[in-house]
Length: 295
Image 1 (spheres, rainbow, N blue to C red):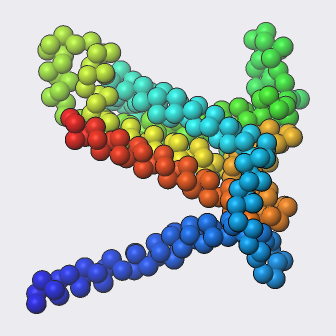
Image 2: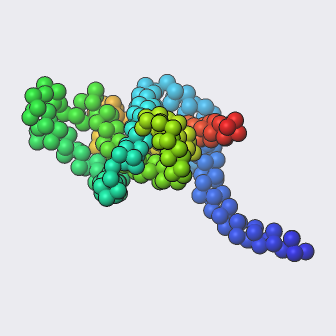
Image 3: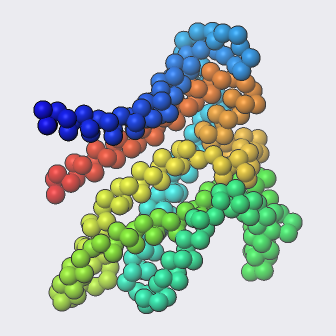
């Protein structure tokens, strides 16, 4: 009787969270999948079933593929900087910088992450301005004026300019996460490595990198998922232009839904985003669990 009462008490605490997940997470996912098989808009009296026509249209749409490639580029660059360079930066902060300067640098690197994405986007729009922007002025000052351009106004540079802004804003945050993970590593490991004559590089690969594996897995999942969910940066800086060259899946979904009022197509794009992010997270977690058991 006591065990049964304890179990019911546990369910009383769990059920509100489960209900919220069902209503605000799982039901919208399932309903979005259902709606992706219908042709409908905000003024449709009743959605019309069209089967996989929305998916056929989407997979034959060159803008969709361009948006998907932009998301892939976003993910690759983000992995290099947020999961790679930020790890090196965190190691440098922990090992080569004095304690007083270390705290100051952490704060400086973290400030961009505390800034609103909208504010950061507007700020970089000014920096990229072809007439009075600091980027072109700096290039002129160092004799590289031939590289100056309308960074957000040319198809070849628009998406890369947005990606650069995103890395500037995010790298400090992931570096701080790595710093937290490194601070949990027992110092005895480093002292033993020093006694054995291990250099800084070997110590990094032999001790630091394996010991922050779980944090690395988390950051990789967050980075890749965030790259496929990106919306605000692109919307603020380019709105997908010029000529759809900087479209990503999120902005293309938004345009089809709220500018062209093609809700069925937009629902199919949303389904693709969900499948990609879910597959990435599930695959990374499975790989991490397998490595944990093997070790």
